[in-house]
Structures are given as structure tokens and as C-alpha cells.
Image (cartoon, rainbow, N blue to C red; front, top):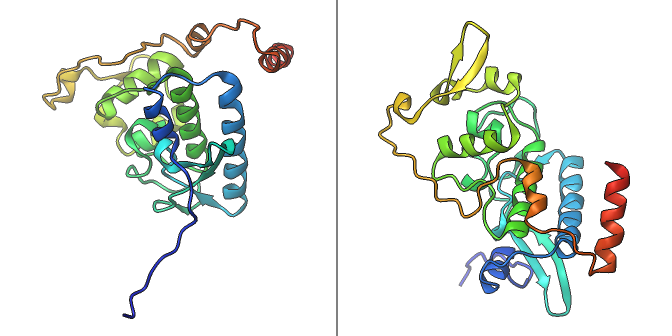
Length: 227
């Protein structure tokens, strides 16, 4: 009838669907590593063609055929993709739980924001829940700072929304996160996180190395040598 149709490759389920089927039980390190490796290859390709994906999340990472080719994936949904540039400022990029500090503050960003999202994906697979389970941008910023410390000064200065969340201490030239009351949004903080991280090192305690898997044993040994 003259309709225009779009044909897409038939893939399996998303990583989110996989985690849901597992009742959000975390994956093992030996399962996560090949996934992250494939995502790194995808990001390398996107950077070569000067493209920012802008919406990397579990729902947009598709398993090709999990029964026949376990943990082989493809990165899909480039609906928010845009050309890479250090001058871009767009706080609407990235899904809420995967937003980098640059996006949260409305600061200039590059392809590095995609790497942040990949880190959030890896953390979800490792924890079985979002690493930064904030209900809004204020909580996201608060939780990120709890595990990773203050945001970089250049990000703070260039952020269009920095003053929405921070005030500057003129005595020692430092940025301090506003209290919920100072924001005047009527937002009542309520910590709903399943896992409350106190630092990135805290992640190591969630899956202690037991030496049962030879592959993991070799990988952990290599990691220890490079530390």
C-alpha cells in the first residue's frame, strides 16, 4: 500500500530482561567482563566516527542469541546519538540512573559520558541494582559524591545548573551541596537504596573472591599485579 517500513535485525532480549528473569540476582565477574569488553569495543568505534551514543543503559544492550552465544551483545537504540564535541551542553542526554556529572550539571561533555554509563551498567550487573539509585538529580549528585568525592572544578564552573545544587563557600573557595531545604523544591529526602556504598572500594566486599573459578583466579591475579 506504499507504506514505508523499517527492517531491523532480529535479536534476543536486553540485559535488563536478562536481569529481570534472574530476579535481579547479580552476575559473576567472569560473566560481566566479556560484556564490558564488548561495550568498550562499541565505544571505541563510536569515538572513531565522532559519535556520542547518549543513552547507554541495560534496556539498550541486546543479547544476540543468549542460548547459542551466551553473553554476546550488540549496542542498540541510537535515537539520542549526536556528534562528539567538547562544547556540547545538553542535560537531556542519558537516562536518569546512568547520567554522568557533566550531564547532571549541564556542563560541556564528550564521548566520556558514554563510558560513565557503561560503568553504571557494569555496576548494576555486579550489584543487581542501580549503583546510584536517586529519585531525582539532587539525590543522584549526593550519592555520586558519597562514593567518588567532589566533582572536578572545571565541571562545577562550567555547569549551567551547578548553582541549582551547590553554593560556593567564598572563604575557602569550595563548593558545598545545598540541603534539600535550601533547594526550596519541597523535596523530602528518602533513601531507598538496596545497597548503600560508602566508597568504590566497597564494591569489592559484595563479591569476595573465593578462588573457585580458574578464569577468575587468573584475572584477579593479573589485576593485583597492575594495581
